[in-house]
Length: 198
Image 1 (cartoon, one colour):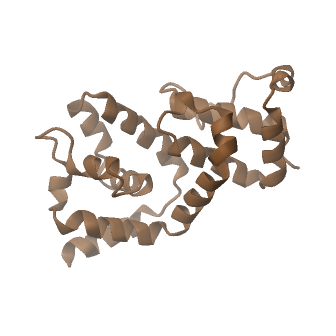
Image 2: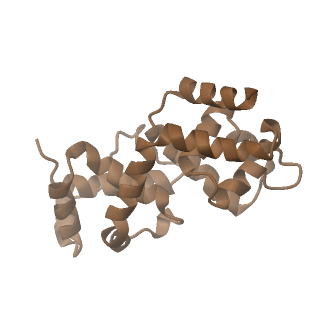
């Protein structure tokens, strides 16, 4: 059965809450939100949800919305107009990254390790660690950053050491995005091990 525009609206609200609210978990709460059909029909932008429900397959709708929320610098301020104007391009870029994840991870890790020892990437002794600086500078993708956290579990250690709004925003993004990244972590560990052993 095709997803209705109202269901797309509910997905949008659930994912917006997931990415912006520390206490809301899309998976734990089974994407439940308080949104009535009446409130949906009162929205002036409901045509966007109607268009999205027609354009994308059911399983693509979540990915489309996730792609747009993770690319946003401030999820709280994401409004539907932003997704309407640049959402398709954002989703296309995100899809390309998913399809070339192994290649991207290998290339970006190669670059990361060319001037650094692996353990030095995570040192907080002089403020922001190298891996965070490289992510903020756009040298590594959010996906590569999340994979490194899956391998080394550095996020919680950084949470204790780094008390600044920049890290807090990034930390929340890693935490919220990680469950959507379906990867074989052993494959990425092997890629990293091979690079370190070269």
